[in-house]
Length: 180
Image (tube, rainbow, N blue to C red; front, side):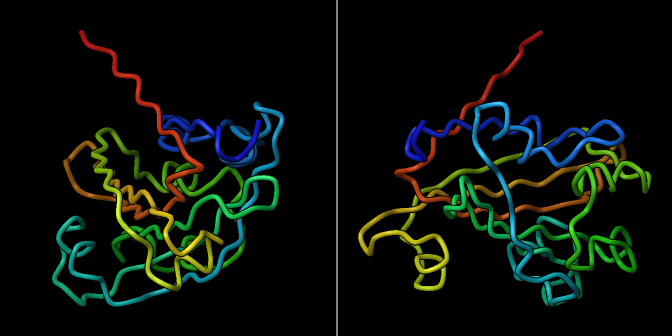
């Protein structure tokens, strides 16, 4: 299967992993006979961008924790992801550091008592900026998909915002919705 035929679903990334398991990305890629890895490009406190601040319910520019990752499929760039957390959730935890988190961030969040129960995703298609184009190794005329996901806990508090940028020609997003 080539990168242009990659099909991804969101559910594995919203569910904590069982003890001893790796992250959801590595497991999903491995199940399809591929190798999914990631490089953590940055982790720590930053001023919240306006869109992120609104989704997290904090003031624009207020400090939040971000983890910026380059997601690789068979060593090729597949996605650039920034995941933001309120300070009350992530400050002083492994989420604020560049080390890989065993089982992934959602597993750590659950261990810390932050369990997502509602997720909202918005997907748009645009042209990448120059930094995104270089990181994702796309052609100058190649569009990207932008997926913004906010995860809310039982009290309807946002615990995480993901902003993903993916080469549009290499992705297919699949949503399965159970009604009733």
